[in-house]
Image (cartoon, rainbow, N blue to C red; front, side, top):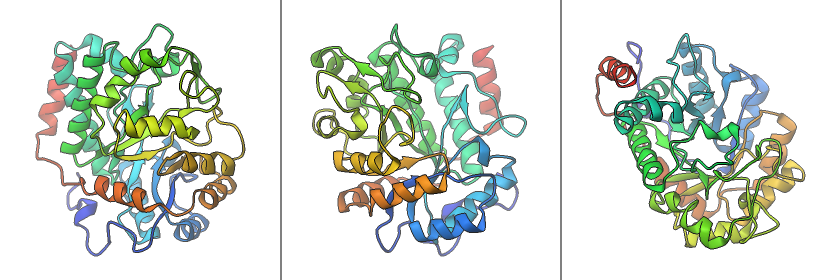
Length: 348
């Protein structure tokens, strides 16, 4: 952290939670600085939080200013999310931030894979916290399968339930130690997807008993993580028509059989796996049982639709959100330079 900077939760006089229910959305924005029009729109829409992408990132100082401006627009300590997995899915990049190997590559290369996984994610948490980002959309608990699509494959940790569960647990712990909240994804499992859900809808035809025993098992073991993200994927033996994000049957299974009690956000609602307008997708996700709709691309017209269709957060969603944000803590003190050197040694 730069000299004189203060973690956002110790800055004075901003409530962590809205006095009235926030809108059940997480929204993106167009560029590296908050425009006047966006500020006015966000103040009126009152999304629960924001998500950042590479288009929003230039330098550490610019990011610190942006995250502060986003919170100021809402008048509260709103959560700010990012996808900083490392490897291909990494929004903060060189020269200002470290470049990380894809997770699967690191697992194969490291002399002590689990320790290296913790160190990597503790370093990521440090970099995020330093610029005011307090939620990371990771860990991934999907399993590597023979047919796993390349868009996902090297982002994962392994093929077995015990290994993937341990890696996800270690990742979540490293984030929390660094003052960043984890988001477990992609519930209830995306590893069998043979197509890219950014472009089309994957369908899994395996029997219910098989996916319960394998695909869903890591999520059962990790069901105490405070936030999770859905998968836009059809499990045909459970609901042959609707992807998990908009399926009441799947959402009930996630709550009752997987036992996930945390805040559930959708994967990006604008992904092409879903059909219908932004409003229709958003309404369907909320009706199915998702707590919050995630809309990422910063398109104003689409965001207006998502905000109108999602409505205010339910009482249960508010309670889950409060429980998740209640885990925000200052980072545990650690020697970052020593950890960076350790990671190099583990990977050499």
